Image (cartoon, rainbow, N blue to C red; front, side):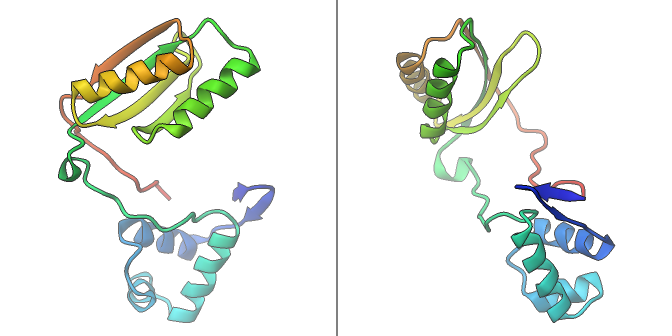
Length: 159
């Protein structure tokens, strides 16, 4: 069962087939998705609407090739902090959310407190990002790892 915001949505095998196909290409017509999953248009539309209303499916977006728009460098940024109070965390999270370079941010268990995935044009652009971030919030230690090659990048979840 998938839940979001206290609402529950039970997914059956047809729902999962629809989700798999939509994760491949959500721009396909309802007729095409229905044909692929072995159903008709109206039941597929009703199931998609149910999954949207239940929070299983979010907004439609477009996946952009970062290199095609000049964002050639991907850095994974490991952050350790000695500050764990709510005020610091709120400032830190607001700073991350305001930075479009941050594609992902995760709070971790273990030695590292946060990991960020940052997309920028080059090392100089990363340094500008880094300088802006540490000007906004104090951090104990930052380690930046440059991705030399993206081996696998999936947006589809295994449903």
